[in-house]
Image (cartoon, rainbow, N blue to C red; front, top):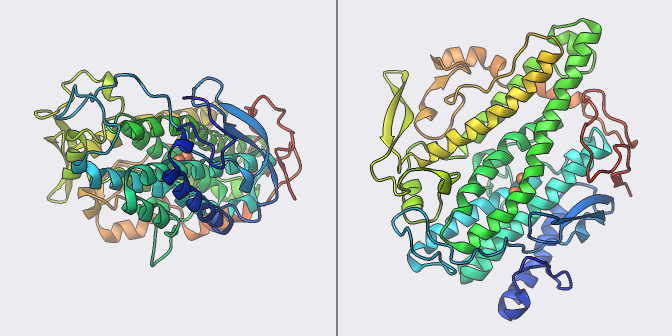
Length: 475
Ligand SMILES: [Fe+2]
Ligand SMILES: [Fe+2]
């Protein structure tokens, strides 16, 4: 079951050949996907030979194969983690019963919605990043970008398989619609806010892959708990691919900080304009980028109180992060969780029924996970002997969804008036001038082993290859 059949038009480990109708439907969707890739995938990249990994097995050990591939020839396919025998529902109202191999009629609409919402983020991020190859700071970084892009395309395949196999005609329509929406487009945008934002430069890309791909990690982890077994198995395999995306983000920001610190130390400068004059990105600008990407990512978890979240949990569709490891009853009827509320213009904490606050529970898990990387970034600054420290902003900062969307809150958690916000927002979020400056540093570097001046070389190799390998052969 875990080995992948590459002799088929659509590589898969689900014995697709045994279901001719499904196979034919997916083979009809395939050219539409390739057209979408040609239109909306990485710009001017179709002919490059890229050193990419491809999944060859769904077993976590030894699942990858590396080779040069032209991206349109990448073998996108359908890979599910191996089935766990006698797997049981382990949370919600139906706890203890066998998991579902098919979609129960009463959960059909909700499951479809969960799958479509997840599926929509995958092509969206490819669209958001499509122009970045033209300004890659090195061949190593260019290769990493393309690796992420092809794998997000693979994740779209993962969700489209579920739609086609389990949701009949409306599933096929949803699969088509996933190729029709466009990130940032007015008439037909992607479903979630952060996936309609721009990723204008490489610092934004690194922040996006650190924070927003991490939202993906937490959503996928919650779905690996699902009682709908094919969804659990699909998302489990997606997570093995996802880890590298967050690594690209964390190490990309780390290398940017490293370079900035080197410039500051070598030249004994501290003021942002002096740092900029030396071609590095000043730390306050990095902090503003962090504030932006962190806050828009927090919104992706949804409203702090949500009856849908309660229903998704109680009916066994979506669990919590590490559900099995939690020591409670996994039904949560009389549990509570602390949420933030606004009273008389002030932020106050209060207890809410946990079932309704499950978006907040997942958001809090995400916050804990994100903070650890920020601590590692600060170690670099500390090691350079500089006093500056990065921090994630307050949870209520710049929120557009839920209770907190009604207030203006500073990064350190003070509620302020709209006028105060307007006067100071340029210190907290990237300004047009910041974006213009960072944009001015973005020049493509194509010589193997060379890096743009604003970023330090990487420390980790790809598949044990030397850092000065020609990771992308441009054609
Ligand atoms: Fe993904
Ligand atoms: Fe990702």
